[in-house]
Image: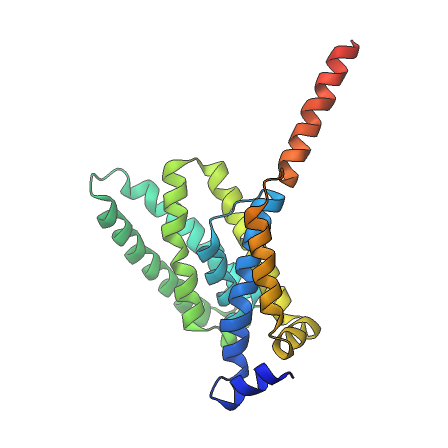
Length: 224
């Protein structure tokens, strides 16, 4: 443990606070940056990846994904019903959230009443905060679904879940999390990485792959 970490812990910051606030957020945000500008996977943005990573960190990835899938399905089904009713966007969004929390409450009641519906998951470790965080994902799902289509929506959600799982994995992998906890100076390097990525104008991996396919197809057409 270096002097920075010791000073923080001696002045009131717990290890969990340091891991979630000072490490998890920068790491997950950086992963979002890397995926977007180097790999070419946009996801839903930084905030959705952060809230999912934090939710998975609090309750575990299996429970987190379980409730993430419920939120996705409920949001899309609720929107399909509510779009038939003419109303303002915020009113529709608010109604969607009310339906969503009722469904989540119903699911929690069911799994408590009928144990086999727990699918082997340990609901005793479930954090109410993590469920609330995952529920806020509904807003972002609706925004992209209204602007795009179902395929783009599902792909963006999947990319966001992937980023969140990577952030969660890093925090749960003891050698890495312990190293980061004991060497907070590495945040300076993380900042530098983000700045360099932000200034980069190179093609993303997905673009290189797509252009390679185009060039190969054109080359085959020329040889014919």
